[in-house]
Length: 236
Image (tube, rainbow, N blue to C red; front, side, top):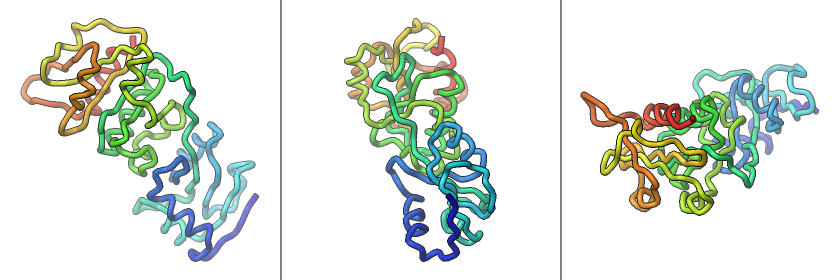
């Protein structure tokens, strides 16, 4: 179904603008590549575009002038397609290989970790309540579409995962061992901490093993870089 809207004062357009800073399940995505991935995963609810075509069958399409897309976009360079999408539903069974983000607040880091987790065949990424929002526009862009293909949740605590029988691997620079000297596990959660403060004390106390990456010439790595190294090692 197509609609043609030419005024930014239209109620639907005003409601869509509110989604720019939305922290709920529905959110805006920009660019045809992301829309294609959302569409393939049956997550695309609406298309807002300047193109009068039938690119996305069976999805409500709103044809608008460019200035309305500019109001909806978070980017300086506006692409001709913006979509309304939702996140994949999370199964009650999360899978055996998980990443847990403990207060990771930089959207670029969160998105990169999600993308890397998918690349290394992890079964899901769990975010603490104080991590960057999954619907943050920078998180969405930096996942490069990975958020449509891997289970994501901010509704599960590390304590709950511990109670479900996951081995907890926590990263820390203190009282830790070289990750290369640790065993690999069949069912585990890799915990990555806040960019400045690291993993919270109460989560370190849940750990079955506390690991670090040996470094020279510098005392720390970006959390997304460290996460990539560790995810690659523990994926089996």
